[in-house]
Image (cartoon, rainbow, N blue to C red; front, top):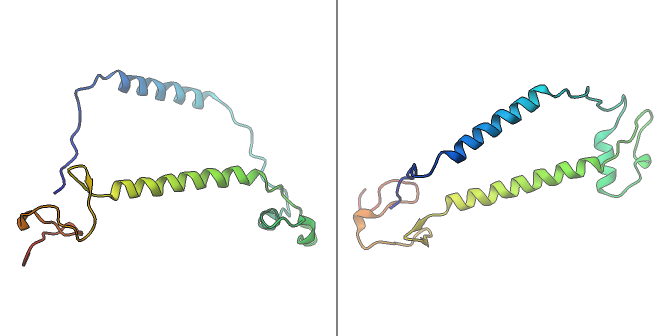
Length: 132
């Protein structure tokens, strides 16, 4: 049987005040900074073809059509890797949150953890037992 999470209020509020102060400082910094105008890509830039050429190690000029210009694909590699790491972390976190534990031990489907049939819970959260 699972228990509800409890809010721990015994700690000091120094960490909370520090977080609020950091939020205010970062907000002031971002509100006061001026960003340059976005450059974008030029007319006729073949972004998808350039990425395909970089992925398969082909010279971009071999697949570009007339009037299309190549875009360096190395700049997209960092973005791809960051997205990869974030998605893997989210997947691992979701598996950790979905794992059921009773008394510190991992519980799998179909394994009965108690001797009392009234305390059994189905995997979908419904009541378990004989006719329930």
